Amino acid sequence: MEQWKRIPSHPRYEASTHGRIRNSNGKVIKQNLVNGYPTVGLAYGSAYVHRAVAECFCEKAEGQIEVNHIDCDRTNNVPSNLEWCTPKENSQHYVSHGRGVQTSYNLRDPHGKVYIGTNLSKLCRDFGLQQGNLHKVVKGERKSHKGWTRGGSNV
Image (tube, rainbow, N blue to C red; front, side):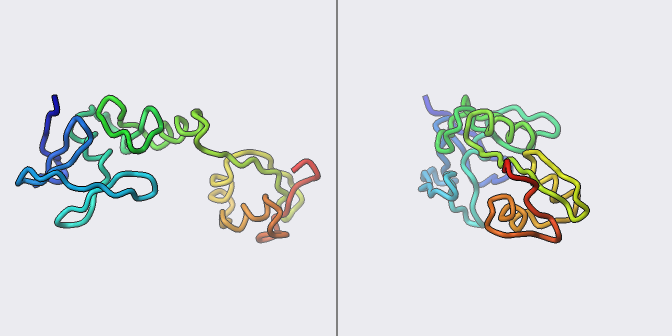
């Protein structure tokens, strides 16, 4: 049986155990996909359905600010498929299920030191580089970025 609960962050709306959202008049709101995630238009903006359902039906611990789809299906928004998690846990789950692609890199900095790894985002943060440009270097679409080049022939 479908159960409804008021959404704490959107008190004029309710979420259901079937992953649906309705307004205060009881009208179920049509869902649209945004980057693969169902969303609903509200009187004052929009909301992701999975977050609204999780707010109502899933326990949340401190530091858990993202909602993970356990089966990796972004359209499956029933409470038993959702869980609050940290950003790190969410990323790890995504990658461990073959959904995320980690680009490995082999780069040489302007001083000749070679860096090999898979977390290009962290490398860019650590050295003040632009990830998009450095990713092009890794893929061979660009010769260099701020003096950083491809590190060797095994790339």
